[in-house]
Length: 504
Image (tube, rainbow, N blue to C red; front, side, top):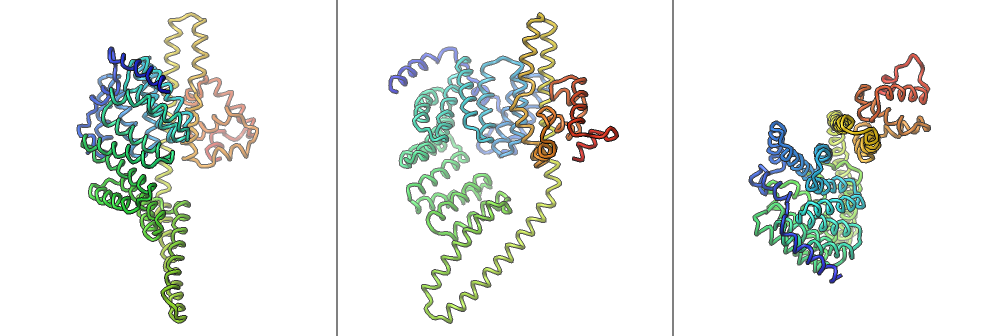
């Protein structure tokens, strides 16, 4: 391994000439002046103005920057629908320009999408592509980041030797070419790796280095994330008092600065700490704070967790009462008190459940309309992508021979409707119409994949032209597909296919 690292060191020492750094240009063009102090919503507002100006000026480079800024903003705010939307927009733009630096940047951003879907093998595939593209572009920054992300991904997969190997390849590149902020990210990820590997002492050393970097770069918001991670490491080392002191101090800072995302992680960290420490009452309190902040108290997992902690708390209280009270009358009285307490808790729980149920019922219609809107946005993005490829095909047809046109047609068929596109489409469709696809398959078990796709398009009330564009077929092909679908579902001649699908 030392020989490999030595050869790699010789290789990257010759990279200082003719370097191109996409990330440097991306950061320099960012209109957000104070990145560490601005909220995510403020960044989104500024970046949307930047993007609109780039589109108006037909500045394709800035347009790509705008998509990447907003992609990252929405990912940070956990809005994964908009994250995917801006990724698709960036992908359409990058597809039209064969630029290795752009492709490398897009591959790295695709890793975020795959992280949402919990697809580590897909992440590794994208990171390999990002590394090759950045190498072709002579971009040492993205080379280092690609290798470092490979290390982090292998760590998530418990393949620690490979994780260590890629980290040691990445670290010299990051130290030499990248920013201090990303070096801090690398140290944080490596600290996580050491924790996974059962080496909390080493993990503590690296997370401390990451925290020091945020102090040097005056980035308290990122520093807060690293301090919360340090609390988890102290808990692994069973330094419970030190962990409590740190996490309590973080809580005060997060409340003071109204850092809600950090505060939710802060609460769950304290809840886990107290649970491991045996203080179930405090653990219950912080679990409640966490889930109140996330507004998901009525979830099944939440109810089970709270019920378990309440049970633990009640058992502990009963044990204390039995030890402290030897007189039977007092014990009897306290049992009655416990019964009253349980009754009150049940009543409060029922009232709370009723309140959140009514609140959720009121929000259902708005959430459905929002999910349907997101689905339609994604549908139109796929249509735009396919139209862009079709337009590119038409241009190619005018300037190439029949043989080359046929080759392009084959390529177009493969690209116009990718598995990734349909996976995203069906994911958002299921959010808008839960269990709809399963009902189709159970009602019509012989239905083909193509007929199922047409069924989904008709459910969205798309016209024939839109269906043709998204499925990559002609208008005549749509008509034939509709006739086949009518036969498949045994629809009477008097019934309209669109009406049947919409009411299905």
